[in-house]
Amino acid sequence: MGFWEMFYKNKLMLVGSGIVLLLFIVSFLAPWLALYDPGQIDLKNVLASPSWEHLSGTDQLGRDVLSRMIWGARISLKVGFVATGLAIVIGIIMGSLAGYYGGWIDAVIMRFVDIMFCFPTFFLILAVIAFLEPSIWNIMIVIGLTGWMGVTRLVRADFISLKERDFVQAAKAMGASDLRIIILHILPNAFASILVAATLGIAGAILTESALSFLGIGVQPPTPSWGNILTAGKDNIDIAWWLSLYPGLAILITVVGYNLLGEGIRDALDPRLKK
Amino acid sequence: MLRYTIKRLIFMIPLLLGITVICFFVMRLAPGSPTDLQTQMNPKSSVEMKERLKTLYELDKPIHEQYWSWLKKISRGNLGISFSTDHRPVVAKIMERLPITILINLISLIIIIAVAVPIGVLSAVHQNSLFDKITAVLVFIGFAVPTFWLALLLMIFFGIHLGWLPISGLRSLNYEYLGTGAQFIDLAKHLILPVFISAFGGLAGLSRYMRANMLEVIRQDYIMTARAKGVSERNVIYKHALRNALLPAITILGLSIPGLIGGSVIFETIFAIPGMGQLFYMAVMARDYPTVMGILLIGAILTLLGNLIADVSYALADPRIRIS
Image 1 (cartoon, helix red, strand yellow):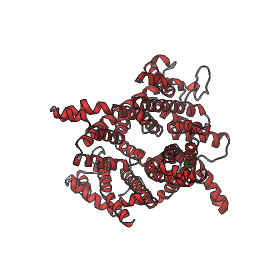
Image 2 (cartoon, one colour; image 1 turned 135 degrees about the vertical axis):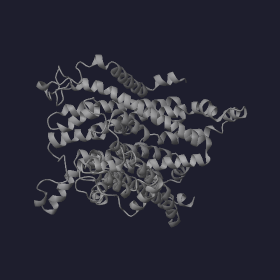
Image 3 (tube, chains in turn red, green; image 1 turned 90 degrees about the vertical axis):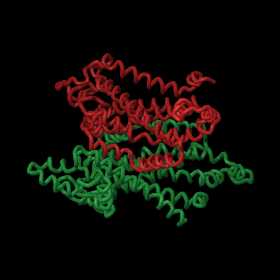
Image 4 (cartoon, helix red, strand yellow; image 1 turned 30 degrees about the vertical axis):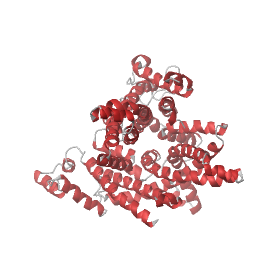
């Protein structure tokens, strides 16, 4: 059964990819989809409850919450992809070096991974942010730099089992360089598990970004992000429930989408991994 | 057993050193040098004073010597003085807040075990039943819910809409005037929402893990043997299978400790609980670097200790581990 057939057979994956596709469309069409300018302050219309005019109400400055959420989708997409991309690149480099060469290189890299795993990730991220300015680029880099360890373990395990296989031995016998073997022969075979880790990683990065922005150390206002709209929700918790409800729902649906897609890809590409 | 424990303890030493190295380098991220930070706030600082501070912090020495003297200082339990206006030692500030964070995390762990284990076992034993399917959906959503958002919704519903539970702090204003029993109830009411939020993240993970584990154990030969010799289904599941499925869960609990500790920042900040997480958040916001570094270090050491306890109790429960 081919990849695309599996794709259509797996309904949950279809739902997941539908959600992810929708998020892409919303992000790219944000300037046209948002009815209001996300930064437009309207002091006569502060904390208005949801109505036909403002479907998700307005915030403490009278800005349209739905428009801010639409622009916020862009932020979460950007953070998810850049942070996870960074983590995946580091993870691939570390994991392939450790798995391919073994010996002391492996020992050093894996002890480093063990040490990094000792830190509560959220503590490490917050500590680094305390020393830098909180900005979208800084949090993307910090989330990436603290999220590569799982990928490293995964890639290393794949390399250890793949490097003994006949096709790798054949390439070696023909005199292929280590770099060529790693990139052209082994890495493509580890593709399935990396893709799954990346998809699930995006979900995790979006959750972390929203928590950081909620705490005021992530994406800074006036740039709208789902997390910092929720901060306003907490500040007005006794009057404006819509500020708390909708952005969180957006995060939940997004993360469900990426998780469904990730698990679906796992089942489709590598049936052996299926539980 | 003692041999195994000692072996684990020795294994911890390089990890502990690695933790201090990473902390030390995070500290180096500070914009400018640490002396700038103190002198910038003080307009009366002179070049001479800067030099004095530099010698005090030994910034004129090579980096490995700086690390070594910092390591000697922290090994004596000296984490420095807080930058905040109270100028108290960081260790004292952390120690007065650590008990409440550990208490909440321990209650959460107990709740996670008490709820997730039965859910996982039942959905494995009744695989593909309605119960299994419903919990699968709930677990999936549980993985995706931002806990701080769930906290907000629960505050709105139980705190504001229904008015049943307090939404911030640990004690009511009239706490001093209550009797012992009433004080206990007051504290418990303040803890319900924070503990639920803190446990929530671990629930989904452990119940999913227990289900997978139980499914694997049920298919083992020794379970078939037990059935073949006529052991009742009840005993097969709850004695033979459950014990074996529970063992690896100990490791999972150990692995969930950093997540629990890290999560304390979020729920303690939202519910205004005076624990280590809230202190950490306030220190980050105020750029109180000594406190930030101290808590980062303590958080990592707590994780290491949690893993050690998990490893040792795993070995206690499973003889195969301590022999190999």
